[in-house]
Length: 367
Image (tube, rainbow, N blue to C red):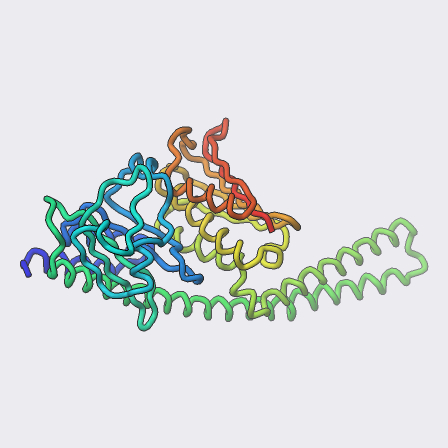
């Protein structure tokens, strides 16, 4: 192997190992794979829990070219073939392979192909796809070995990141338990003692009627507050809450925030964890991720606000930023995918520039 390519591989592996943000590291992984192999296009497809393509990160296509493609990859053809046959695949012509299903309208021409699965121990995380070797050549065995080494490093990096996330969840659960104890031992007991003192005052026969009514109103308020805090304590101590949609959304926000100084806030309205079923929840996570990523990359905003609404028959995701504002006629492939997600779930997706500046997007789904 040429020494320059080995140096490039070494630098790429180091880049993956030191990456603080996994999403950004994986995007650079695809860029490095393209550079090392001499490919024109590269992509990384990640498997969802249902075994289908969940995420698709690509390089080599301009946003304008991506917008011309009729449909977003769904994990069929060679992409799906690598999921079911997770071994390296190197071919001279994509269309000649039995698993090929052709390209959608607007897709650039691609001939040569190199696909490498990404494994995490015994699990298939996804695959690296490289196409159209420059100068019309075919991918070589050396290309396959180099990219396989890069994919192996990616698997280790993803595994480490998951381990860190698991450790973080343990820390969060311990902190939640501490807060729950403090709420119960300090706040509730003090409020309860205050309520007893006020009740004793109401027994004073010399207390004016107006004062008596006011004290009873305060006692009722204290009782309601105590009940609210008890509900919060129960939610904090419930181990299943750590896996709820609200916690997962916050995890996405925390992950994205590490790669951007943008201020991101999130509000929840209604019983989000209760009303939104598991299937729709996966879509909500993907929608939040896509819209926040777009805001970070394209809006130039300082602040972005996420709002999640859970109602009896539908849920809504609202994302608003104070950036340059959405430009009509520049719908990216990712936004097209959001529209498709909404339509598949009896909902809608809309995005527009606000009169006062900034962008607002709304995605909904039926429940």
